Amino acid sequence: MKSTTWQTVSREDMWRGLLDRLNYNDQSFPEFLQHHAVNGEISLARRDVRNIYASRPTCGVVATIIWSHARGIRVNALSLLVRDLTKLVELFENDDFDEDQMSQLLGQPGISIPTASKMLSACGKKYKGKPAAIIDDTIIQVIEAPEFASDFSEINELRGKSRSRPIPYYEAYLEDVASICGRYDVTADMVDRFLSEYVLSGARETEQRKSA
Image (tube, rainbow, N blue to C red):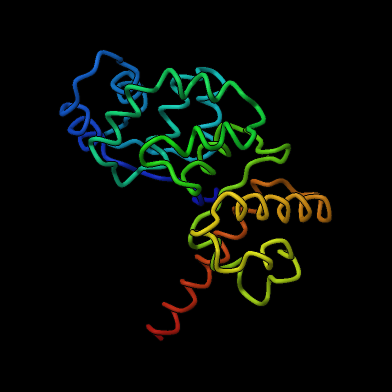
């Protein structure tokens, strides 16, 4: 059975409604919806976004935005992302982001470290020489849990500081992920997927106990 981790579904009419409120000439977003919406929905997994980016970078960057904002985005934020799409595509020409390039990405509206991590991972990028891995609030709960302390020794030094020191926190996370990859011969994709599924499986077990 295929994993549904990092798969999102969003409504085509929601995105078209947002785009209708903008004043823009670029047709990249409408063209993406035309080609990738099926029965009124855009269903994307990380591998889908990566394949789209590999074949058509501009379309791929649009895919990362839609994939990482499946529940929607503020109109003013989308307006600026549409306006700066060419700059974003140029930024993503870098295969290995440095801190300055990461800061440029985070300077875009609606893009935080979790969103940036999804965009970089989906496009197969690195950050400071290490393959990008997704991080979000659920993963942070896992890597700060006592049972994972030995695997995330770098994170231990920044426990509770994911919001106050987001970039150093992400760098520490990638250090730990790279270490895990080296020890167990796995990829960054596999590590972040495991961490996310660990949370989901725990939630399912809790629900099952409640309904028993």
